[in-house]
Image 1 (cartoon, rainbow, N blue to C red):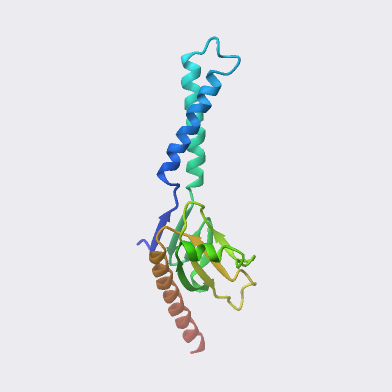
Image 2 (cartoon, rainbow, N blue to C red):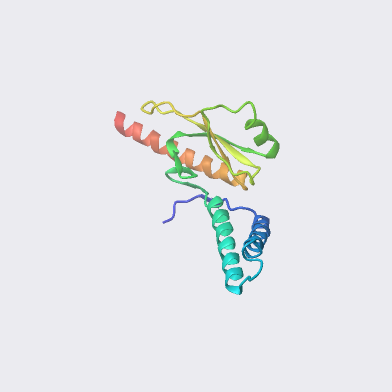
Amino acid sequence: MDSRRFVERRTVPWWWWLVGLAVALPTTEAVVQGPDMSQHPSALLTWGSLAAATALVAGCLRALGRSDVAVDDNGLHAGGVVLPASTIGRARALDESAAHRLLGPGLRADAHLSLRPWIKTAVQVEVNERDDAAPSCPYWVVATRRPSELVAALDEVARHAAGQDLETEQKASS
């Protein structure tokens, strides 16, 4: 059974691929028409440099978009880091202006950020400290295109984790 309640792949916008192509084509022309090759450009060099430039740009764009956000029974997964379900506090959706204000001068230096510059909306998640845990960050800010869905999934996981913690305490005291 799949316990994931929310999954989002934070890929780059489609128009960035057009910009990448606009970078790859002049790069190819510069290689082919460079000072040493202007006399005898070859088709192999032309197609080879176009393929290499396109592959380089595509690799960079894919690497930028390899960040996922997921919520499952274990907690919030963002950018390869996990916020355990038992420490998920209040979550609130941030529209573009609220995210901009939060990430401005009022940002705490010890906050955990998982942002992508092409995603303008986000979710702020307060971190509930556990008694046995070392002090960590006060909150996370996670960029997402679907903030209300992420907040709903986080609330569900937090309620589920709180119910399990209550059951564990009741069993321990009896």
